[in-house]
Length: 289
Length: 289
Figure 1 (spheres, rainbow over the protein chains, first blue to last red):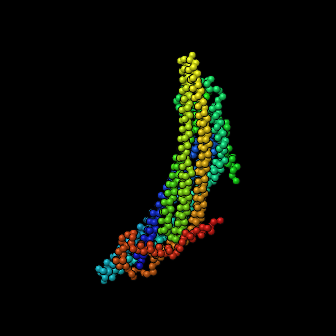
Figure 2 (cartoon, each protein chain N blue to C red; figure 1 turned 90 degrees about the vertical axis):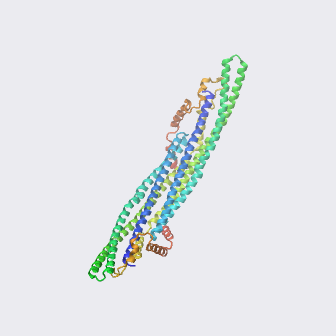
Figure 3 (cartoon, chains in turn red, blue; figure 1 turned 135 degrees about the horizontal axis):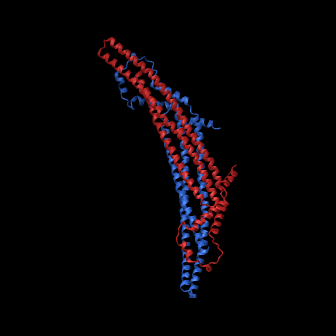
């Protein structure tokens, strides 16, 4: 194996290193960007769920309202951490992988430069060969051609060394960057999952302490009290006029009776339930070991 | 407020309870199903990343290969846990919410039945009213009509009581189901996040122990050794024949030299790197406190 062949093989090895890095870093970049986007979609869905939970809580009896609100708050907290996860993945994982493209471009330029110099070496060798075949006796011409070949070889050697240093730096940076980027990815994920465990542990205990029976009593009281099932007045003595039955025929959702009920509920809520979320938080803290 | 009005108000309150449950449980169901699907998408992206990491590892120097493989394995483990999360969410959260529809249907049927009975009561009251206006002196007719009204009222009372029991059961079941479903959701999420923390902690320590310098030495040795940059033979004494340069002109990716290089790499890998993943696992265990 002569030096020109070996140089060519070496530069191909280097090109391979760079092409490989370009290919895989590109794929890592687009996959991790997609991973980040999917995480953001998950956050969006959970945020929608949080809004529905809050809406639902507002239609329920105080205990359940407090429990559902507390659950919604915890779910929202996890989404805040997920949002931080998304932002960190963008900044510390996806962006560095994107920027990697610039580094690869620079290394490609170095390789291109080397190829030009090496092609010159080959050209000079070809000329020398032709001279030797055409005019084997022209010592002066052959000597000049040999000098040019030697000069081109020195150039190629120097450029090869430069290229070797460039590739060395490139590889070192690649390894460092990979380690940094993957470590950052793991750290970001780890922090998010740890926070989620923390929030859900507290959410679980809050939900466990939810007093279903008290809620049922509230519900029963409301069903009987507000709608007056056990109205003590006898029936047939006070047969209603048709006029008073008029509103019963239409099943309008916004009948005055229903609106009144909503208001009653709302005012009752304010009196019996000062701040259910605060209450439950107190209980929750008590439950922590 | 007379009893017919109060019954009507009560049944509307019950209908409201059921409609509300139908609305919100339906939304919870579709949102949690979407949440589960987005989680599955996230798992898919991470699985793709795992495959690319394994492909990439196979093109790299032994230390990096071991480190990247180990990272890929850990990432795959997290996806296995995510898959379990997806399955559990389907079984214990989405399916129970779907099944809830049947329960709502049954309660709706009870309410419908009550409405029929109540409408009969109103009809009898209307007949009585008309009789009183048309033939106020026909005591017998009025007395019969009053009896029919009373009978219809007794029916309505009984059905109202049945309905009240149904709604009570419905509400109790609703509260129980909500608590169960949300508790299960929290538990499933908590278990997944806890497992992810565990796996990523170990992945982080494995990546931290990655020996970048040893990899660079491998890389340098390969660049110099395999491609023979420091070939000791002098240059100009052995000017190559043009024939030997032929393959250099074409930049074919599948040149024999490159294939040979791949084989050399492969055989070298086998000798220097018995089982890199096992090696790194050993180190990793040592790093745990």
